[in-house]
Length: 254
Ligand code: PEP
Ligand code: MN
Image 1 (cartoon, rainbow, N blue to C red):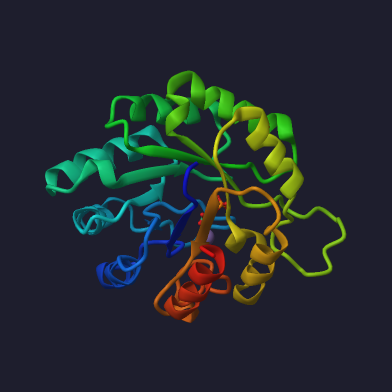
Image 2: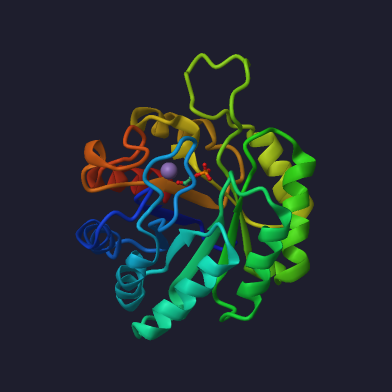
């Protein structure tokens, strides 16, 4: 990718005020996209996201000229967002979607990509790695998706692998494998961004992860930020506040 991108925003869209506060903040920065997930796959049952109710909020953000995205679990989610944004008079070209680590049904992954193929070609699809460390599985998802969608529309994202008894002295939530991620980038010739939030699992360690990855050729970051991280409905420990985002931006865009 020519320029690095930073994708920032709350783990989950919770209410209109929360997402618009973040959007107003991000509007000031160049090459920054916003995340605000409407659907949340959870390790244990809990808040599943606001779902369709949040589509008008995302529509407002697209109209502010900010590229905004959500995780999708099903192809129907893609349709709901596309139809809803259109209905609200939003800008479809300012959308992106992602397939998260827990969505490991290749049939659904392909259906999501098929649905996107019919949408404006500016809309990108991010693919995160699966939770377990296996380069071939990740390459497999990418192959499934790229059978249906132009490769120019795909971006990859490393969010670490679930620890399974390995050495983890920093107590990361997920263990990064920067070499593996860069190998996937090289083999697929696709941009690869880094998600330090889901690796760190804790707001202080987010900075540490970014620092550890500094000499690897990542094309950007996806980082969780929230106006009031302590009261976030999901991933409250790892979300940064808006001021901390300014630090990330100046650190990363140097
Ligand atoms: C997320 O991005 O909020 C998320 C659920 O991440 P992952 O799919 O990497 O677990
Ligand atoms: Mn999260």
